[in-house]
Image (cartoon, rainbow, N blue to C red; front, side, top):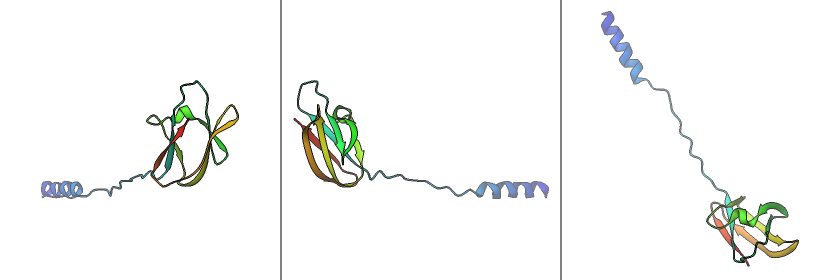
Length: 102
């Protein structure tokens, strides 16, 4: 009888399982990258809504994306203090835009 009780207990415990949970993380951020057409070694600084975000070469098309919040933004590209590109754009959630720097 003890063996039968032990077997039943093992089978019952084996059938019990702790609940499991799986988290799926969705990336709904937007992004921009840059296609730089000039062959010079000029440094282009990227500004999003007036905030310096880094160098354009750090976010080259096909290499990296500058993640931003979805919505409207003013993007400025400066070279030696001069505005090379200024564009107001809307980027939807999950979308990536490529800006051309000439």
